Each structure stands twice: as structure tokens, then as C-alpha cells.
Image (cartoon, rainbow, N blue to C red; front, side, top):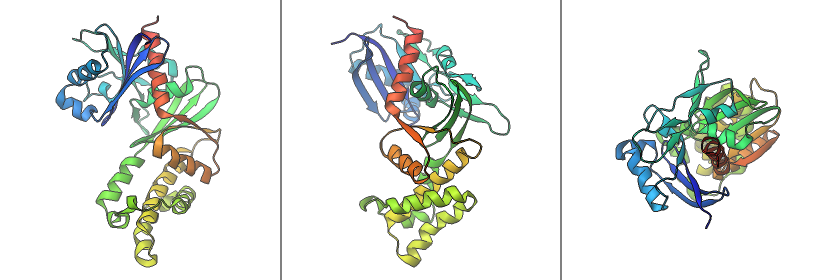
Length: 304
């Protein structure tokens, strides 16, 4: 087996992912759990990490590079933010050491947009961004990273010039569970997905975003008056929110092509939305991107 070089960790709010990385860059072992920041803050970050390191039999001297919410103010050790505009390479120089640990553990910083009119922050996605584009990307790009809080980042010749956060995933969860629409979407998971309803909702919200809240209610009234299925109602809700997000994200940006950093169901949804709107895009797997970003950081901090 290839000798391990370091451990890479993506520590989110509700999820934990760890990779034992070999000297040739290969993934030797992977572990995933629900021990994100919220859980680890109670259990203890050091305790959670130590348990996973023991499970993969990581040598005591092996260093660990971490991105994500472990570096938040409520996390393990606050890693702070790098202000934009900033080069993607600057992420590599801002890692913070975790004190009191027997091994070398570094946590990467996030990015901050301190514009008083549009303040914004990201933590974890900057590492995905680095892994997706590299340090020396050329030209202007719009990068979409869907999630609970979707990020749209504008990059020009390897420099992050600005970004926006859209609460699309959280709004979908809240609206589908805690509003009148909860009745409309009940049982949707047991029905086939309604792609046509999703595409129609994306197009409508993108074309007339000011009517989004009215379109959302149509998921309910359409069911009462026209008998649309729960799956169609859910598709309308999802499509409206994603269409609204894309309209906002591209409002001030020329269509120079979109880089989609996503995986699984979200990747499929956003790809369908982009195709529906005839938007050019390139897809990069989110797990691959974050691993590449963590590897770039590890190699910069601990060069062989």
C-alpha cells in the first residue's frame, strides 16, 4: 500500500468527511459521518477527529488539513476570513494551527465580502473553488456551488472578485415542512419526479422573479383546482426557488459560461435547470473539487 502523506477533512455544519491521502495523491481510506460542527461542538472536535484517525490507523505524526465549519467562530479554532478581491492562492497561506494537539492540524480560512451593501461570507466552498479552478484559472467565470446555502462566485484570471449566497436549500426545506405547501408536497417522495413541472417553474421564475412568491402558492392552488400531484407540487417549489436563484445570480453578470460544482441529486437538478434556460455550463464533481483543494493546501504547507 502507498504510504500516507496527510489526512484531509471537510468539516461542514452537519457532515464530516475524511480522506487518508497517499504520497502519490491516491485516496487510501475514506470516512463519512453526521458529526458536523453542530454535533462536534458538543462531543468535542478533538474527540471526533481522534476517533476517525484511529479508525483509519493514521500514524501519530501524520498532519491533518481541514476546511469548513471547524474554522468558524462557533467551531474548533476560528480561522478567520480572507477579504475579496483575493487570489485563489491566498487561501493556501491563511491556514491556522490548532493548539494543544500532538499532531500538526491546520484549518483553512474562509472568504469574506465586506461590502456594506452586500456583505457575504463563505467557509468550505473556497476550498472547493480552489480545487475546481486551480490557482491560475484564465478569464472570467461564474461558479455555482449548490447546497443548503448556494454560492455563486465570480472569478477573473484566478482572482475572486465577488460572490453571493442564496438560501435556496434552506428555503426549500422550511417552505416544504413549515408552510401551507407542506400539505401539497406530502408523499411526493413516493411518486415519480415531475421533470416537466420543474422545468416550467424554472423558466417562469427566471423570467419573472418578482412573482416568485405567487408562483410558490400556485403549487397549492394548482393541486386544489387542477389536481396536480404531490410530485408536481414539489417540482414547482424546487424549480421556482432554483429559477429565482439563477435569475439573481446572473442579474449583473455576462453569460461567459458557468462552472457547476456539485454532485448527486443537486447536480442533476441544476444541470436540468441550466439546460432549460439554455445556459452553457461545465460540471465538476463537488467531492473531487474539495479533495483537490485540500490537496493543494496540504502540498503548499507540507511540501515533500
